[in-house]
Amino acid sequence: MSNNGFGMGGFYRHDMTDELSWMISLAISDVKDNAEFEQYDYYGNSYIPGKKNRLLLIPLTASVQYRLFKDDIVDNFRPFVTAGLGPTMVFVAPYASDQIYYDYYGNPYREKIDFFTSLKYGKLRYTLGGFIGFGAYFGMEKGTITGISIKYFLAPFPDGIEVMYGGYTKNIGGIFITLTFGGMF
Image 1 (tube, rainbow, N blue to C red):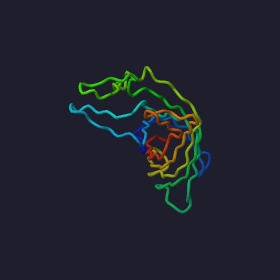
Image 2 (cartoon, helix red, strand yellow; image 1 turned 45 degrees about the vertical axis):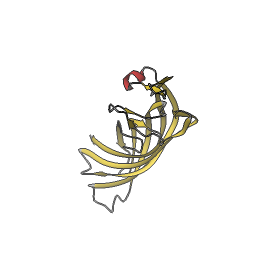
Image 3 (spheres, rainbow, N blue to C red; image 1 turned 30 degrees about the horizontal axis):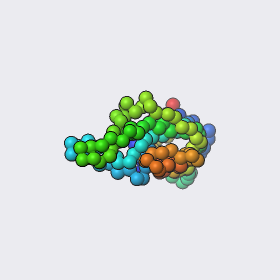
Image 4 (cartoon, helix red, strand yellow; image 1 turned 135 degrees about the vertical axis):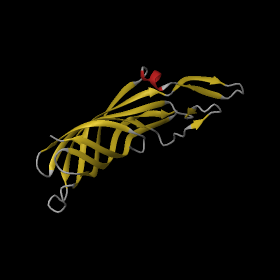
């Protein structure tokens, strides 16, 4: 979960020492602009006035985790700090057509494009993204792994990406709350 929406992903984690481990993760999540405000028409259809593009954030990151207080806290609660860096893709797909239509009363509007239809018109944008954060794993050290972390992720785009008509977003990311479930072998 993030201030942009929801997402999911996968990871591979390897312990180098009792306190230090590395991890590779790939995720996908929705990206929204702060100016987005969903509205509904008379028939219950949702739309976001002024929205131009849908964005999907796809970071591939390599990170390190450092376990805190190893000798002071029992093994079923393992807090850590983490930082990562890697290539980040943003899939930009149109939200509305560029053509302006007029309703019965002469009000201008742009026709909303269905999510799956918009995917074939999408394009990838690339940058280098990274994060810092902290979290904790719960349960015993062998077997399954369950945890939670809070990360601040940043993916800069110097030219910006137009999410809302006339508004360019130059930094994509924000605060992410990540729930981790996995198996250890």
